[in-house]
Length: 193
Image (cartoon, rainbow, N blue to C red; front, side, top):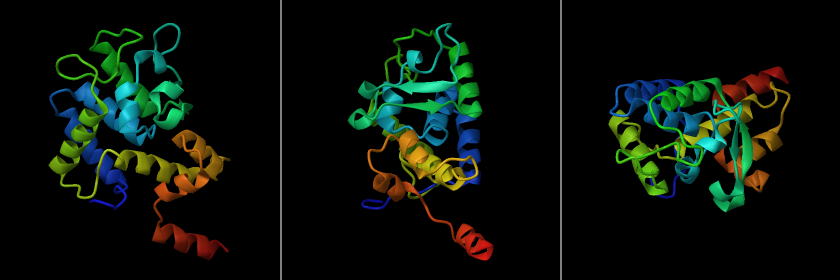
């Protein structure tokens, strides 16, 4: 959809996508790609540039945070992102079936080469087309992550500023543009006033 923001995924959409990747040709890699998008909010270019050093500790085990340096992020927006348990589990599974060099890309093609940002974008396009999710793109997972984080920020003792930092946005206005509204949530808010 040219000019339209990527669709935010619902919980059922994510579960369908996870089932699809579990039965795909490269289930471990594909699960990591999906989880990096929906549970860490990474952009396609950041997924492509992610190395094992950025997701492992000094012993080579999956870390508790993703250390995304400025060189790997869009517009130098490097950041630290706490590791979601589902993402940690997916990375651990991938680590078990691949040769892990700290400088090697986490997401690699069938030919064992680092995937390019364009190939990551295309992979997501094929995934969502296969699932019949119209309006979804590689940015859908990122919008899903930011929307869900914004909805939960207050309950976690945080604010939209925390969501902005997790997203790597320079401006809170940019972050606000990613957040999808919810009529049921708006009704609940009004009833609590």
